[in-house]
Image (tube, chains in turn brown, purple):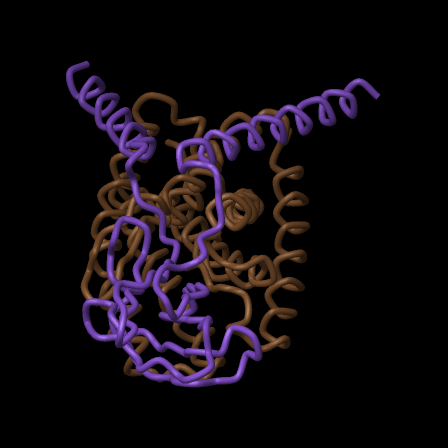
Length: 208
Length: 145
């Protein structure tokens, strides 16, 4: 998920930054409408820290290696604030671990952030329809990885990579991560729903 | 009650896994292996190979392209030394993950000195706590006003 500097065209890099700035501004505006951002800061910090270290847990899937992302979990738990949280996480990963480039932080944020927002919408809708929260949370965990790999593949195809190679090296190895993140997200959502349901970004009517 | 405990333990296990200091980063490395025919291995931290990755070998002084191709399944590539070239810039790219190194014709590569991984993790946590602190001070001041 960490595209390096010098891989993408300036147009794609500019697109990533512009869209990310818009989404971050939109996320804060939406969060302000839903309540005090100050109350969200501890939760935001904990999950940003989890996202920051998640990419250190990697699994060898020859001929490549894949790592946890947790964007589905962040989308489900943080809602719209998942986008700025992952932006901060990606900045720290780029500066401290050299995971991904500096110029590509915008497009890398887009590739993980937009699936997180989609999963937030799916989670809210599913919970509103009375579906089991852990089940819908698990689906969101897997769906986020699927969407991220598709976005990543499209981004790299714009840089001249071949579709077949993308399928072999990006989409197929990430199936394993999909399964792991489905389980992790379902477990965390089940735990939160039972112990502290107010941490889930749902309306009061949805929580019933 | 029992299931709550199981969930708590599961969460703690996930958090502990996240903090294992030997955990490996998804960062790319390029390292020279041996002499006459220069053999180079491209890998992620934790020794996971960058298999079937595109590579370019450049003259480190002039950035002139000397060779290009694809690593094998184990992340290895090899090339014959070029007369007059003492240092090679090896660039390996696997689906946007790019690793590069300057490789000497006589053996060895020039690695930059950097902080250990666990120190970088704690540095990141420090930055996050600092940001959270600033955000809390800002929002509370805004609230008072």
